[in-house]
Length: 86
Image 1 (cartoon, rainbow, N blue to C red):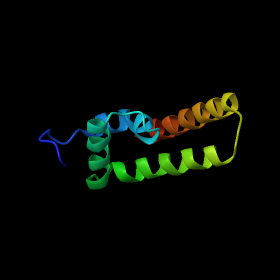
Image 2: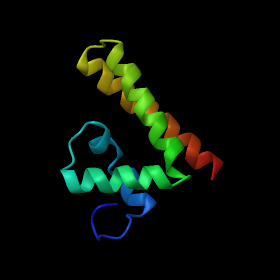
Image 3: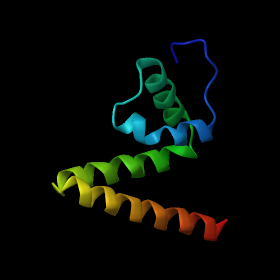
Image 4: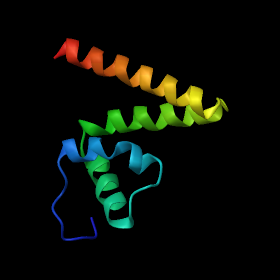
């Protein structure tokens, strides 16, 4: 990692996943999240799933209002599944 900043925690990386994947982070934060995902075995599958999911939604040319609603429903279902398995 090019900065002297310590590696961010998993919670921080996950909280910034959508901003990172949408290219909305500044260069420093983008690099910090990218580095975390590269080295964290726990976070990599999550980030990879989110990247593939967003790429698929974008490729379907779904109207934005529908894709937002669909994305919220899927994320809510995934959160509920995670909570049930915890």
